[in-house]
Length: 212
Ligand code: URA
Image (tube, rainbow, N blue to C red; front, side, top):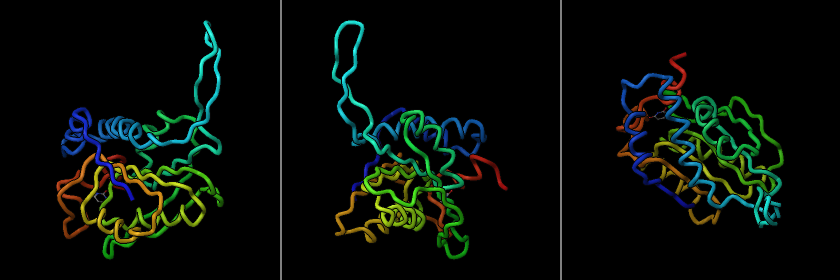
């Protein structure tokens, strides 16, 4: 498993505003999209392409296009939905599947309540979108779900990550030589007793869409 913590002054600036408790939902949504586009640039560095030729007004040129089958972007509902627009802006021809997962507030264990994904993901590159890698439970369940359906390589894009979540992912997938990459905007300090990332940004779903 590879971990990439993005390091860019523009990203750090946007993350600072995102964390601020005074930032309202419309601004939070806008910033989330912008941050994801920056992270997606890094996360898609190894997206598969096929050589093609294109005719410019002057001459033939060598180019590339995304290899088929196209990559699949998988936002984890609810909060991952706030990341979708920023991702597909960079990769408009990708397909989009959905995975609805919720974690129990007491046990912090995830469960799946909805899925709209192809049964067969053989040979597909998958990009999971989930803003907060906290305990790691939801992401492990989502990655296993995609691996069971044959995904070839899986990149998870998260805005923030906690060391506890990264450690659990490493323990789960260590030594299995699986093609898993985590790209995150920042690695925070720790989790608190309620499973929130510290200093974090609070509940990403609530900050994107309000408390419902
Ligand atoms: N999910 C969130 O929305 N925030 C956290 O801090 C942890 C998990």
